[in-house]
Image: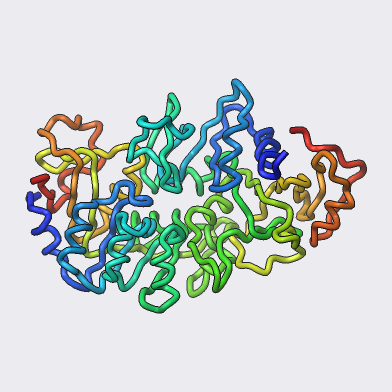
Length: 215
Length: 216
């Protein structure tokens, strides 16, 4: 794990990169990193996240700045700008049931090719996918998702990069930390090793590539 | 009594001790206001919380304690938090005893459409498809009609949420279930006649004998 400034962190991300971004309606999103990506003006990004938050908040800032070419999310209902860009053909949006989305990401991080889920069978979600029957129940094959970068927000990071999350700000964060080639973390608090007891570490430091300093 | 109050109060009577319950946004959220005194139920927010409590008083909110709509909530004693994979493992895995969701349309067999209106409203399904597919019991809380038009139809014209039928619909006019795949009138709201319910419903309703009033 290396510590870097927020400027250096955003500079690691090239135009056209795919980003998994933590957060649920902006709660648990690495806000400082998003602000810096907007400032540096990265283009043609693919965003994989639960939702696109709201205008002026979290991922919504990337949408407003017109930096997102494709979104894979479960819900865009609280961000009218995402819907406008989708309907205007400016952004491709792939809507995925929330439980399927998180499991596809988990599969990507856990070395699996995909998962079998009953969610979506017989609905428009099934289009273009294969069905499989197991013990008399029908499932869809949903393939794994990975990304170039995972942008993670934690409540505590220790000097080594072990992570601990706060309440509902955990959401997608520990799962995306497994599923990207490069993992970048912003933490609300950076603390000495040992402050997070081994039993309380949710994301092991070994998974983290870069910790953004609070300087 | 307001329509949504009737619906929320009636659904609260379906709660049982120790249940894990997921409430959708809108009318379903109001069910939490009518939990009978002394009844311990666990409310799940799918963003990663069991033990969701009421909106905290001014100055006691925290940015990392929110419901699935991103609004501030409190956590009740015994609450716990987890990531989204766990949250949907609870939902899809059949650990959620009951979910209460809104509905746009329900058909005569109990199939639900509640997540999009093509060309008009495409918010995404969020957790709705997983909830309807995986929860042990699915209850729909909705107004009986929309702009005077029935919402309980022979067949849904909107895209379905799941091929798993719902268990119960509660409206401000009636309670309807689907034994053997057939829409069946169980109760009418106080002051509402069986004929009024039939007139406001497109799906053919089975009427098993005398229909009792809703207990509220």
